Amino acid sequence: MTKSSVLTFLRLFALISISTSLCGPAARAQTTGAANLSKVGMLQGRSSSITTQVLLQGPAGTDTELQIICLFESTPENTLHGSLAEVNEKLQGVLDQIRNPALFRGELGETLLIAPSTGSLPAKNLLIVGLGDSQTFTPQRLELVGSIAYRESSLLGVVHPYFAPTVLEGGVARYTPGEISEKFMTGFLRAARTEKILQGVGASRGKLVQDLTYLAGPAHATDTKQGIQRALADTSK
Image (cartoon, rainbow, N blue to C red; front, side, top):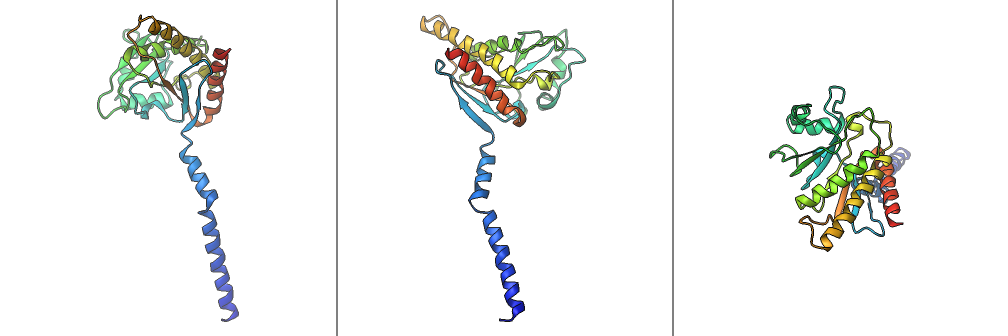
């Protein structure tokens, strides 16, 4: 074998070695990590039987019995962004049609249940909860939203609801996702404790919610999870 042939062989061997290493354990670990990125973790408090998971997905693509979202008051300045705009598009503009002071006002605690038509949203039911005026909004309102989310899920017989706060998508970005998720979970767990008492004395026709899936964007997942953990910790005291 000539010197030139030896050098060519060594170059080819080096290229093959590099290619093989890229397909090795490290690359497989990266692929596995990407596949598991959608679920941040399962959370459960010591005194709560409800398991909560943070899911990196928008409300427009969830295949669930009940997807819950929030809307601010129906005023011209409260425009839809991000996932809310996507939900509206998949519903063929239904949100734009109902967001009217003479129809769905979006007042704090106001609810509207939509049954999406086949081929629009994957969710069987979409529950909208009003957040009120965006200018005076505070995370404390999410405690009421959390209690509503639990009770409506229970009354509908849905034991695995999905929730997306859609506060950022509604145009309010002055609070952290963790502040929002903490208050929501506080109200959700409060309603769960109330329902458990009613179930115990046979005074409720609803069902006990088994678990909650809380939707968050990749950039907000960690903060969202920490807010939920704070609510669970306070409940366990």
